[in-house]
Amino acid sequence: MTVGAAVAAIQSMNGGSSDGATIYLFEGSYSLGSGSVSTTKEWITITKDQSGRKDYTIINNAGTAADTTYMRFADITLQGSSSGVRYLGRSPAILWIDDCIIQGGGRWVINAHPAIRSGDDENDYPAYFTDTQIFDVDYGLMRGMLARNVTIKRTGNDPFVNVMCIINAVVEDVDAGTTLWHADGYQSWGAGPVNRIIYGYYGINLHGQGLFMRQTFGNPGLNNAFVNVFMEMREPGRPGSPGGDPQLNSGTLTGAWDHLLIWNCSFPYQDFTFYNEQDGAGVPLSFKNTSVIGNLFYQYIDYNTSEAPEGTNPLYARPGNARNNDYLNNHYIYSVVDAGVGCATTPHWRSRSCDTGVPATHSFGDPKIDLNFSSPIGTFGVPNADSPLLDRFPSLVPTDALGRLRGDTSDIGALER
Image (cartoon, rainbow, N blue to C red; front, top):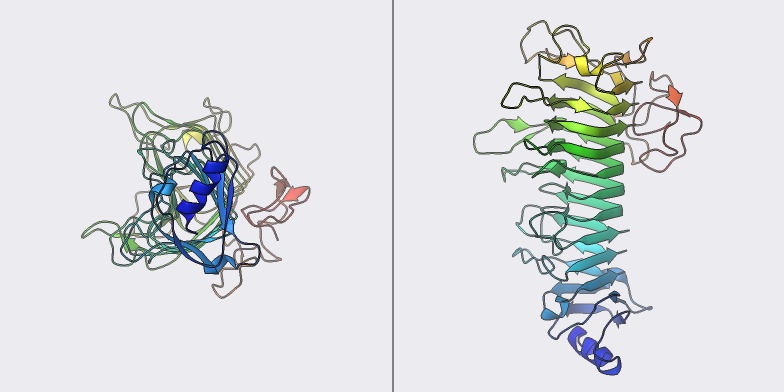
């Protein structure tokens, strides 16, 4: 029996509705097939037979049976093709992929991911991805509402674009190769991001940019939180445009941000850059109501010299600043006074060491963490026994980026020793 035939049988016995139905598939490869699926208030679930194996129970083609409101795939494999056919892009209207394997058609194949959502923003064609592994795709997840307990490996482009909420993600090997794609660990584009939460992101072997977030004039970033984010950038960087320079930095935040929270994050390789641009009247677009606590920065780069006239601490991050910003217990590997030296030097001539504490709470220099690339997940990036990051401040979050308890006092950064 095909998927379409199973749906027809269910609806013939259920008054024309598939609400709450479950279809069990024997091992094999399936198309979604033809036929109308009616769901108005509950999921229809497509899953494997109890005796089957997830990686041998495969959906690999499109069909009108996906044209419905609520569809859940559970405990099966969704397989992309090397021809870049994206068969779950705009249907079903609301998609839930739970405990599945998504195997794309190749990291440098356009539309290699079968379930990338293709609306105009994150609220179009909402999707939920839980307990799922994703491999060999161009983009990892785009415009989803929730990604929880996901693993994404071998992407040629961004692992995450405009995903509203990420809870516990492991990302490995992001590399655009020769495609000229601008591969970012997490990208937000369009109007200023609103109500984004990234809690627990362990990313290693990234060859582009880490966080890449912008706001447009009149649309500031509002109510965004990044907690327990670890992003390890690795040479070589890749050019994001024809003739462009290689892109390799831990993150870029551009423009105005209100209620921005960055706690216990680690950016141990490459600069993290804040472009505090000015509006048409020359008024700085900067940060207010911001909390930046317990983070490890290779370098914190500030490109608005009017906000940091002299010294290493910008006006918006000085004790008692009028914008209600807190910068506390951060570690800066490099930081220098803006003395006009060339940009090719280390430390960079715009590197800062923000601190609102009195007395100061920051620290500097070698963080002494494990950055041996052969180290397994769970130890790579963890502070050494003699690291200045250890036990620095009362814990703000209960666990680290890999779910390990922090205790009463927290190490600086995303990973606890």
